[in-house]
Length: 331
Image 1: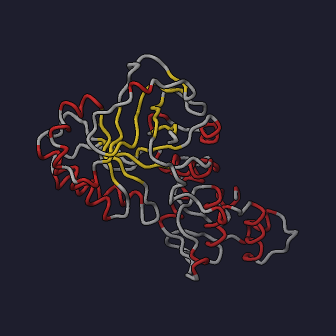
Image 2: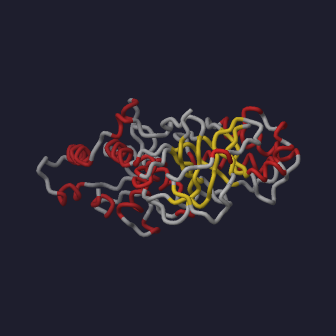
Image 3: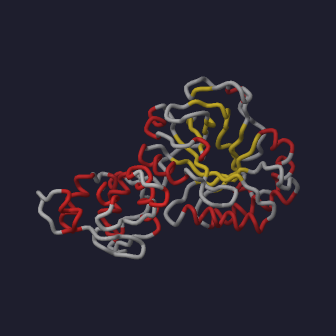
């Protein structure tokens, strides 16, 4: 059985160079999806796009829960599905360990409710926990958790929280947690990991279940679209010659957003190019004989492009391609 090496990350790690992470030997990533207030983690979209662009499989996303009852669990799970949108269906891990949470039979009800909403949304579901927390609390209620949700990702830091470990350092497999009464997916063995491409420490994990290319990865045939292709298609749409200078092309551009020119012909080349860069994870409507629409997915993609490439200020990361504007100029 192959064991995979990977990381889980959040805004705590800041900006990540995912190409360096991939080159360092990381075989998968799990991304924090939401904050305590249920807004997206500040780096979630950038991390998602970075993984896709670098070819790092996104095994799943995780959420540290504060849901102390089933109503809050259902509401929070629905908000996670909203953050993911209709085109992303990763494995969703519920981090159940906060001191404010119930540890009696209600814990199983919360986990089951969360799992029901997530799986109805088309995602797989499991639970993250620390070994000590499981032994003290979850072991007593695991029989009440639905069998299909007894998928565990467990933390046990056998080196404590002081000794740094590189991704290439050997792991003492004799310390593998064996206490979980369910299907064991992964072991988070240190929070003091060091990986090239990440400033500071990061959690390191071993994974025992096959890491396949995520269903949300950009299909290979759709990423073979380059800047030269985008420029060629743009010239045809704007009606300028193949020898036209950039200034002439820019002068023909129009504002494209969720409220202006939403179905303009330029949307399809934009979708293809943003998808090739790893910012857009939706479908290409033209390939499905549908009218192209500049929707929420493309708005998010342009915001990420404005942040990472255009280097726009936060207030100007609006997801709008303003006619003759800076974003068009950069493209």
